[in-house]
Amino acid sequence: MKRFLLGSALLFAAASSAFAAEALPAAVPGHPPVAVGPKLVEPHLHIARSNISGHARIALTFDACMGEADERILSTLVNERIPATIFVTARWLKRNPKAVAVFLQNPDLFELENHGEKHIPAIDKPVLVYGIASAGSPDAVRQEVEGGAAAMVASGIPAPRWFRGSTAKYDLSAIGQIRAMGYRIAGYSVNGDGGSLLGATVTEKRISSAKDGDVVISHINQPTHAAGEGVARALVDLKAKGTEFVRLQDVADTGDDKTTE
Image (cartoon, rainbow, N blue to C red; front, side, top):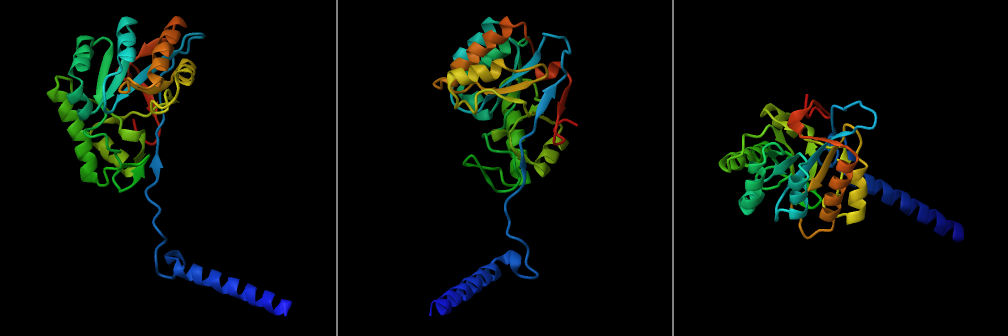
């Protein structure tokens, strides 16, 4: 009896597995596999090294996505005369005219570049990235890029040459499209503040550990987050070490995934 029950159970399991396999479109002849979404990349970017022992050259980049300007970071950059590249969205520009004025009053310090119109991931197929819906089509990617650039020019900012999309993730076809529009795409090599979600101590340690040729990404739009305090401290730490700070427009660079070729 036990053998009969065991045999029946095995036959049932085998039949169930076969049925499940037949129920999958990928297992049916003539049907394509189940779609799993576009392949996304998060490009790296490095700048030309100084190649001088004990002398690190790094590029600080800050995303201004939405929200308010983080005066802890902005005032440190200005007071310490530290150059940086700021990626701004149209939404942030509209909300922060005073900070924009500071940027424009210090052209020797700040390079302003394009972070998009509405802070939508520049991916031309529908997908969620960290819960944010992508642009979803080539036309929507174009609008995100062109809308951001138009807002910058309307604010008195020179036409941008670099683009960094929301979440810093792309699919390869969107990268090709944005490059064809004349933009270089800004990746990074050091994630300084984890999307402004890290604590002050961890953020300071990450940014302070940047090496010769690194491009650091952090955020300048979250004044209530602890990460901003860590960013400000790290800037002072790096300056005390004799770090050379450059903007993206100042030096040669190398990006992967055909983002700068």
